[in-house]
Amino acid sequence: PTGIGARQSIFVVTNRKKDETGELFNGERSTSLSYSAYTVSVPPGHKTGKVEWADGKPNPMTDFVTVGAAQYAGRAEFKAAVNAALVGKAGAEREVMVFIHGYNTSYSEGVYRLAQIKNDFNVPGLAVHFSWPSAADTKYYVYDRDSIALSRDGMQTMLQDLADTNVSRIILVGHSMGTYLTVETLRQMSMLGD
Image (cartoon, rainbow, N blue to C red):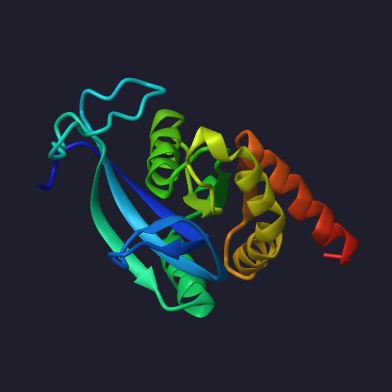
């Protein structure tokens, strides 16, 4: 429904494999990047710092709900979408905040967490989520840690793509193990002279 809750637009770049529906992504590793965007409705009674998950059928009055989605064919379409979102923006609205989730995080959890952060902190500009392949299970810490090593190139590609758009500044926000991926990626880029 229109007009219920605050809307947060989230771009997502991931090296996760698509799930059996072909619409969302699971915790398995992919050798290629996928590009998406979502519009998430934050419920009117939202409590700061919390993601209100649906218990059964989602209700936009009480739960975070995805109300729009788009898939991009590749890097060029992603960059074009970012540039289109920047049209008419100035100052801090031309910045992009990149969120890199931590250990034990599913694809949906990362997207909704970024929508919550953007909403609660009233973050101006664009929000991009780099969703690396976490198993989303506390038993698989080593799998998640190893996924970090396999995600550096993908995160580097995303950062280079964002730098190739009309954004004025890229702000990186790594959570938990996502900080490890962030530092590893920046180290790799530095060693390559980027």
